[in-house]
Length: 238
Image (cartoon, rainbow, N blue to C red):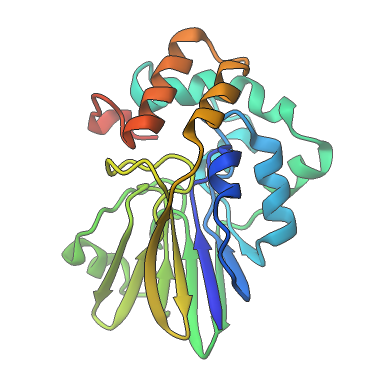
């Protein structure tokens, strides 16, 4: 079985469309919306192609109308995009976001999978990087062979006390200095962390045509070209 694992698309349709990977099953770990210019086609793609999908904090925020706290960095970009993302979706696309589960358990190829956007302790909001010691504390009651996570936008594959922790990275807004779309493939049990170039200029042209304020357009475009925030701070994470 060949499993495609994606996360953190963030309304970047050209990045998502660039992933042309044969697969039997697609797992989507959330954050289809916010930041980018094309929430609707990204949600439609997930509706049609993601066999198993869960809710990210941005899906939750857009669907529930959660106000954004913060005026800088990624929080600023979230605030500037969230105001119009919901209205860009059709009613069936809105319903899809509203019904996405926070977590999901399933068995594939004889392996127990747990899908969470953040961590098993806090599925929506907790950030954990590539730190085995901290992950060990979060996996104590995971009851899974493979835990698939997103949220940090950082690609990694860890083995922690016999449990695989897989973060495929971000399709639509990488934050590790590599602007290519990130994803993962599990092919007959073998995990591959993969990247693919996409037409960033096309995404930026769509950003320019979006309702975002001018300064936000410039900042988001810089983030996509650099594969990171020009001047990130911990409190800017969102």
